[in-house]
Image 1 (tube, one colour):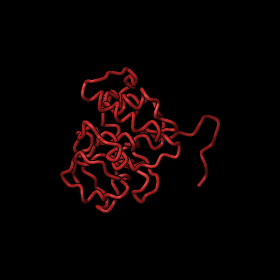
Image 2 (cartoon, one colour; image 1 turned 135 degrees about the horizontal axis):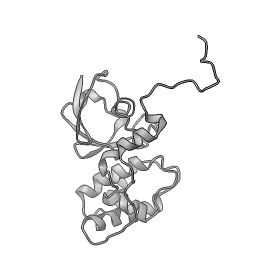
Image 3 (cartoon, rainbow, N blue to C red; image 1 turned 45 degrees about the horizontal axis):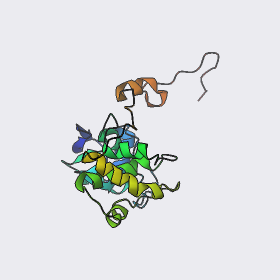
Image 4 (cartoon, rainbow, N blue to C red; image 1 turned 120 degrees about the vertical axis):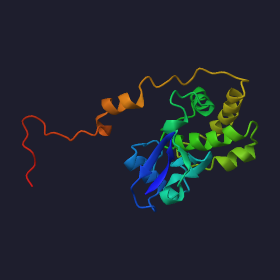
Length: 191
């Protein structure tokens, strides 16, 4: 039984301690922002913060996280006000979006610690794979995020989502905990 904090909430996972953090977050906590990409830690689609550091959650067993603080894309900023989220929206960085939560989390870890990252530091911190090719805009967007963080620039690119996570769970059938009922006029499948 593993206990740590996820997005400010204490959690107690009754799962095998060797379970990768990615699956505990997605399957047990319904935090689906971190994506499964490669399962080997190379692509970065599953990046989250553990104690402020960007980590590939597919490679970290939950048993190693006892007492840690984990932040997922859902917990980075509920109103999308984090400088990286603002900069990515202002610079139209997002293409298909699959890798973006991991890229945002890697960039946020860098921006939160470094107010003037060099190109080499950006490249080292953002080793995530993006098949859409956001790389030409990525460095400048990270520099913009630093300017936003330090108050040298303001943007109004990423409005709040307009719905609370609790309301979203009620509105989106895929994340409701209700059992499915057969549709009217159809008999339930025989077993």
